[in-house]
Every structure is written in structure tokens, then in C-alpha cells.
Length: 196
Image 1 (cartoon, helix red, strand yellow):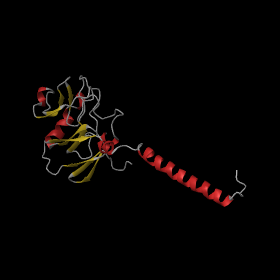
Image 2 (image 1 turned 180 degrees about the horizontal axis):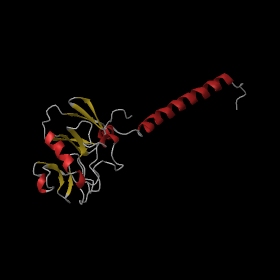
Image 3 (image 1 turned 45 degrees about the horizontal axis):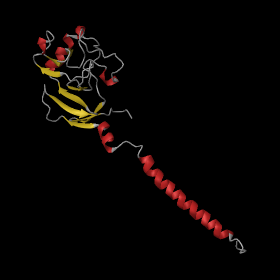
Image 4 (image 1 turned 135 degrees about the vertical axis):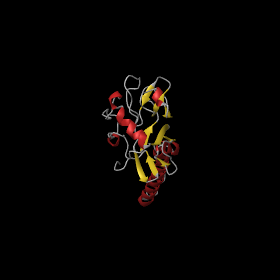
């Protein structure tokens, strides 16, 4: 052992320097670890809202987009389709969309923000099949109704507002996703106006 006097200032400097380097190393290791808790870009995009351009959508036409891995339908309903919906309300399981799975914006006779534009998740509420849009010819399935959605897998039937008919396997109306109109020709599916 040396009999040299202890240099406390040097000892303090080494202690502080070691602490700073150790702290920087801990932060350097923690940042990527904590960042790994955030969802990946792929996961973020899978749940991200989807813009839908409806400028070329013709009356009576349906377009499909994908949101969160689900098919979403946007239908331009004609005046005849809207009138037809009033004629079969007595044959529907939930004509006023009172079941709790619906958004408040879907609790009106046409289940949409604009009567002529219908937006719905295109998945049957029975077993998750995707019904077919019958623009004419639906009268073979439901008398007096020429337009609707038919699930060929198990025979569930939905009107042009996505309301399920009675005596079919599907228990609920089609789901209405959150959506908002950005302008007259663009819909943002996945985000509802005024909801944060």
C-alpha cells in the first residue's frame, strides 16, 4: 500500500464520470426497449382510418374497401331503394337499430349520415361470411323487396340499411363502422366526427 495522501477531488470526479457513463448506457438500453412496446407501422396502418373517394360512385352501385382487415361497403342508394326500405319494417328483427352494438349515428331509419350513402362492414353477424349485394333479384329471397344483401352460406338476409330480416340465422343488423364525411366526395372510415 502506498502512503500517498488520498485525492478526494479525483475520487469524486471518477465517481461522477462513472455514474454519467452508466446512466447514459442505461438510457441507451431503455429507449429501444420502451420503443418496442409501441405498435409496429404495420399494426398502425391496419387500424388506421381509410379514405374512400365516392366521386365516381353511381346510383345503385356498391364499392368495397378494406378497414382493419374487414370489407367495408359503400352503397349509393337510389330513391327506389330508400322507399323500398319502409315497406318491410314489420319483417325485420331490429328495425330501429336498438341493439347495443350500433353507433348512435346508425340509429335512424336509413342507418346512415346521409340517406343515399350507406356505409357498413360487409360481414354477416351470424358466422362472419360476406353477404352478396343483390341489386335487383332480391325479391326471390324476400317478397316485395328487389334490393338487399344475402348471405348464401346460411341464408341470412339484410335490407338496404343492413337490417336483418326475421327467421334467419343472423342475430344482429350489419355493423356500421365509425365514419365521417371529409367533404362531399370523400369518406373517412374508421373515425367518427366529434369522437376522439
